[in-house]
Image (cartoon, rainbow, N blue to C red; front, side, top):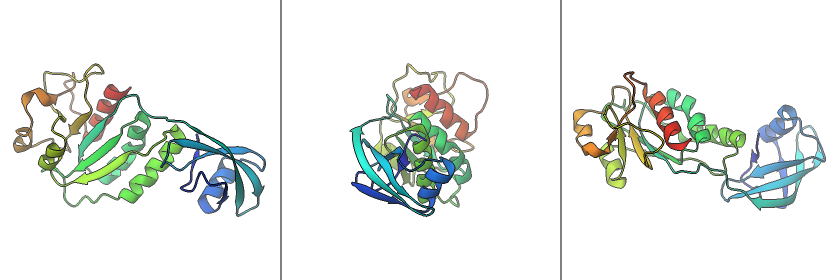
Amino acid sequence: MQYLYHKQAKESTLLLKGDDHRYIFKVRRHREGEVIALRNLEDENIYYYKIDLLDKKEAHLVLQNSEKLVVKAKKKLHIGWCVIDPKSIEKILPTLNEMGVEQISFIYCQRSQKSFKLDFSRFEKILLNSSQQCGRSELMKLVSINSLEKFLKQNPDAMALNFSDKFLDKDVDIETIVVGCEGGFTKDEMALFVEESIIGFDSPLILKSESAVCVASAKLLL
């Protein structure tokens, strides 16, 4: 763990209870007198607190010092991801977070099942746990958009990941890319993209949506 998230980090004193207390002292086995790092994920600072008093249910922390410490990917990447089963999204979110994806816009494309409901509070909890482990200093942004057409109006420079003779690699400068759901894009949706904005993988194999998202992110960010 690189730090503990606490929304009140930066205050001169803090009281840890519940899950935070259990994780720091039962799982991480920190002890009274030690210094631990906290972030509030609203500013770019990391805050160092001394464990001043500790009992079985609560811990009293005292701020020692802080510093500005930005930890994020060198490049920006915004993914437009046509909605798939939320259970599959949850499995992949930590990986995308660790790679440094800046934002995911979940798009209800024509082949997305409308019965899939996105639990953003659950997604945020997953991202918080992931960020504490990888050290990321800001949370990934998550939004929902009800059509591909609306997404492209907001992001006219977006590229589409699909079958193409133009291959995606780390030298291609892309900030926004759209990945289809299971079954891919419909003909009407592909017609929204000009040919120059369609890019693919140099592989004869067909990837699942979540696999394609991970490969594209790795190629563009790492």
